[in-house]
Amino acid sequence: MRATVFTKTLRDNRRSLIGWTAGTTLAAAMYASFYPQMATGGAESVQNFPEAMREAFHLDDLTSAAGYLQSSVFGLILPLLALFYGAATGARATAGDEESGTLDLLLAHPVTRTRLILQRFGALTAGACGIAAAVWIAMLGIRESADLTSISPLEFLAQCLNLALLAVAFGALAMGIGAATGRRALVFAATAGIGILTYAAHTFAGRLGAEWAAYFSPFHYYIGGEPLKHGIQWGDAGVLAAASAALVVAGTYRFNHRDLNA
Amino acid sequence: MENAIELRELTKTYGSRRGLAGLTLDVRVGEVFGYLGPNGAGKSTTIRLLLDLIRPTVGRATVLGLDPRADGVELRCRLGYLAGDFVVDGRQRVRDCLRFLADLRGGVPQQRIDDLTDRLGLDQNAHIKKLSKGNRQKIGLVQAFMHTPELLILDEPTSGLDPLVQQTFLDLVTEAAANGQTVFMSSHIMDEVEAVADRVGILRDGRLVALDSVAQLRAGAVREIEITFAEPVRAEEFARLPGVRTLVLDPAGTTLRGQLTGEPDALVKAAARHHVTALRASEPTLDGLFHAYYADAEAAPRSTAAV
Ligand SMILES: Nc1ncnc2c1ncn2[C@@H]1O[C@H](COP(=O)(O)OP(=O)(O)OP(=O)(O)O)[C@@H](O)[C@H]1O
Ligand SMILES: [Mg+2]
Image 1 (cartoon, rainbow over the protein chains, first blue to last red):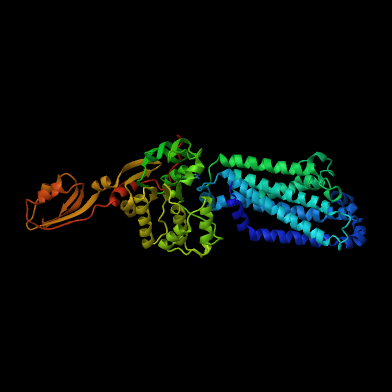
Image 2 (cartoon, rainbow over the protein chains, first blue to last red):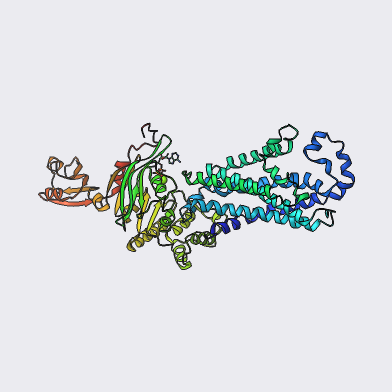
């Protein structure tokens, strides 16, 4: 199978991909490098926060490097960026082209709809891996200077892998909805909405006495196993990967069985 | 394989809206087929069905002996398509766009692409988003023709093109036909269809209302005629002749004006009984004929309850 669509998609999206990578990496490096200040002074001020909030955002463990990163950088900023990268890229993947009418031209060529989706999904995944790899490298770069040596490079890698998988999962959700409906605005809104809801489920499920709800949240599989402390969580990574595959397959099935919008 | 396209009872409804109603049509291998019809007649619907971009509600289409759905990849290798509202991602240069589309087909000689862009006057270094509508349409033409496909399916190919480029397009079609390629093109422009098509089908409200060769249609087409006599003549002598549609004698009784279809033989023989001082007859045009089919076509078709 030639990868013409895959490479073209990456090339067309290079600017936005560079933007996502640079922005995400910068944000990650900046907030992670605040750790030394946080470890000394910040933890005390957190004691004044309501207990519910401390629990929800795991603020009680701010003095350990992993605890700090899990509650701020890897717990809030990066996963939300991953969500929006997945939603935006996934919405563009087919729904954007279908709405603008350029999909007609592509699919009048010897390309099956399945191949189109898979290669676009491949490009989305490659982008997510690129972003996560850049974050990992940045973490290794500031690890010494920011007092993060209690986390091993492998543990950072484990969390970055889950970051990539989280972006891929939301990308797959967006692509699936887009392939099924062809409506870009709907795709973006639905994906972002589901993202925010599942983030809330992950964060507050325990508080609300509905622990089961967390299991429906991709964020649970992303960080619930605490890769920064325990290394690679194969089970959680597997759940994210399997969910992504299922979403893409379902979207592709629907895409193959419907009319393209004119 | 005798027919490049075979449509059998092809029907497409969009919810309760009619797109195409039981269309049966054959397009022969090697012919140039003109597909005409007023706005909303179902031309683009037919064409998108052929490409498997949409699926029929009822009926079957066979293209180059293949099923558009099951054998889509092989089929689309062998045909070139230009959409009615051709759009292409503007964030690239013409050259890169054409290279990419050629790569999807496993490659096309650069020489061939250069030839086509030169003939159409398309700058390959231009950014697509900066091109005018007509120049964008040229990209559509190039990508449809560049791999010399067996079958060209063109939906209003000349829309937006200036008259010079329209002529180049007609030349490309003529060359393709000489080369044995089949061309199926929809159009609103009678002149261009008349110039290149072997046969013409006219669609209205999703149904085929006329199907004939251009020569046959032309034989039935209308000529404007004007005969001037030296002496006054009587109108009754000419009124009932075969082929005469309307004939009016001027008050002086010496000039006869009107419209004629088919052979002018009977009229000429009748006129020859008098001293004819001037005779003028226009070329028959299909225009009048088409207008008859187009007239009172529904501007926006109503919903049909029965499917
Ligand atoms: N996606 C769609 N949803 C609903 N109705 C549609 C859709 N596409 C086409 N139609 C309807 O089907 C009919 C045929 O449309 P089609 O585009 O095939 O006409 P056409 O002959 O190509 O017209 P034109 O000359 O304006 O291009 C029209 O009544 C149109 O409103
Ligand atoms: Mg049309």
